[in-house]
Image (cartoon, rainbow, N blue to C red):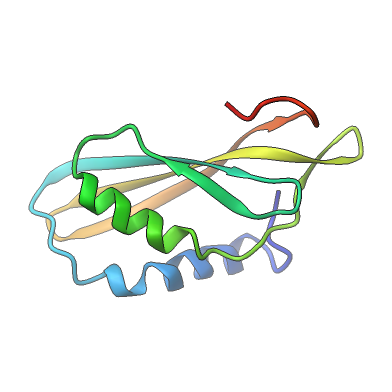
Length: 114
């Protein structure tokens, strides 16, 4: 899957979604929260989960922002639109954060996304 305007534009969309989050104070060194999601065959990003227990409220707040990311051009498998897993990891360090996102495996049409 990819954003029609390119990776840099998609990073801008993530930054935009997280803009109101900048004032959150996290007094932790080296904490991280990992979010997994599924991009469906239409390019919608959803089904966010996090198995981290660092801060459940913070996890829910981040998910509520990530759910508004724009639609992507879906991945394909054998020339057919397919689901794809995605991971976004947030790293927290003394009142600031950064993140890294990565695309994981493409799920063949008809297979479960788990």
